[in-house]
Amino acid sequence: MIFTGKVFKYGDNVDTDVIIPARFLNSSEPAELAAHCMEDIDPAFASKVKKGDIIIGGKNFGSGSSREHAPLAIKSSGVACVIAESFARIFYRNSINIGLPILVSAGAATNIKKGARISVDLDTGQINDLAQNKVYQSEPFPEFMQEIIKAGGLIEKIRKELAE
Amino acid sequence: MGMTMIEKIIAAHAGFDQVYPGQIVNARVDMVLGNDITAPVAIREFRKIGKDRVFDPERIVLVPDHFTPNKDIKSAEQAKILRDFAKEQGLKYYFEIGQMGIEHCLLPEQGLALPGEIIIGADSHTCTYGALGAFATGIGSTDMAAAMATGQLWFRVPPTIKFIYSGKLPAWVSGKDLILYTIGQIGVDGALYQAMEFSGEAITALSMDSRLAMSNMAIEAGGKCGLIAVDEKTAEYLKGRAVRDYTPYYSDSDAAYQKVFEYDVSELEPQIAFPHLPENTRPVSQAGDIKIDQAVIGSCTNGRIEDLRVAARIFKDRQVHPDVRCILFPGTQAIYKQAIGEGIIETLIDAGVAISTPTCGPCLGGHMGILAKGERCISTTNRNFVGRMGHTDSEVYLSNPAVAAASAIAGYIVHPEGVIS
Image 1 (tube, rainbow over the protein chains, first blue to last red):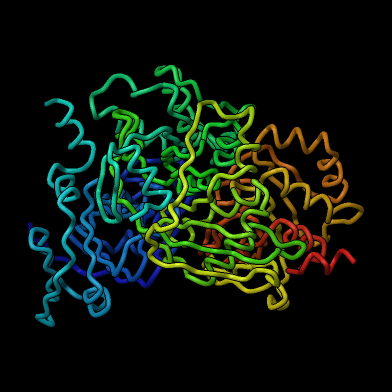
Image 2 (tube, one colour):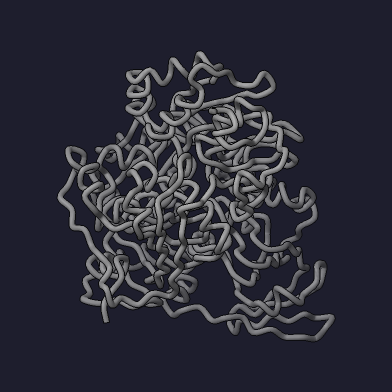
């Protein structure tokens, strides 16, 4: 699957408190979470983001709380994929479990600029900075995680396994 | 080749003799925890799996502690989802307001987190129970749903970093300072995807309350867990509490570690983490002139009886500074009651400290002490991110309870000896 979008770029240690501040966690409705996505780091994000856009962060993206509301807010806001140099552990699990594509690429995280148009091929893990015509190869996922991704998330995977 | 503590725990729960860092396994879980923010999402996902019943109604704990007592209508609806689910499923460990406490103070106190177990919680500070020799780690709501349905979860076996603390801690220096210092040394992603193992004579000398505070913040270094080997203190703590038999596991002397850090802590000062990351630590003597508007004492990090005792010792016959609001949150009803029995609460009230029923409250910017634009708070909690306790232009400084109490009296960040001569 290939998609193309505009880059929203942030630095290191983007934490789940700025992705979705706790004051909005009295709801778990995806649309409501999306309306406040990234509010404490980029108040204009929710009004600017378009379906298929891409977030790029630095090291330790999604650090802090275990709130699944964070990847859910990003996914529901239409973001196609998050690219980072590294992801915090729980955010990484949560994203795979709920089917938010995430890619680890230090090169892409360092070099691709804010506002760039890039295309991402989720099957090959290739990230293409279109204006620069530069391609970055992201790290492949272990086979077990690929199975979760292919099944459409952890719940779907378990549902199918229990049905068999 | 020997194994580390966490490798042994995971191997035992996954049905293997040996596991290796990097290996992905399905493992049996002993306890599954959720709260009023994360469990409603988990319950929604659980319904999609198509199983009517949870795998074991005695192995799921639901604690409404974040936005409770319900702060608004939406929060009340979320908390109700837990209550209804607990009734429907006949869950043994649902803690209603009046019984509940801050989850990571409550589970150890109730003997629900035990050595050698795998405990997963849809709350990042679940790593607290590493202090009891358990592999305890934070996971998300979907993971919680999967585990409620199947009693299992996937794990990537983490490499272990060993931390050895030598020397005797000076007065007013606690487990909180050890972990803040450690995070300052290795950074907020210094233990990313890895298990932290805390050892050495300074750890052996720590009280259980201080050990729990230490393991609580392993996540703040990116750690998967923060383990402390079971010893006589652990066994003593668990006597009369443990709801099940348990099996401690110990790292082999020839176990392989990713890294080993050794710290001499005999001259360690109380540590302050400056905004906006827990790694921005300084010794309190280097804090400079930081005036504060609020002091928060409590939370899953420092809401235990030892923390309240140290606060009372400092507040005895002293007053909270007129420009400061000081709010204290006992971790559980039992801690609250014990504090009343010991005269701690009376001392605090006489000093002008506001006491709350147990709740996560302001720690995550929920309620009960939100900061206005430009305000500063010294807090015994665990995170000082942008906007964590309120306005994005407010600031949180993390410290131990003694420093927070002393600073509430002085009106600025100060070493306890600055107010107690």
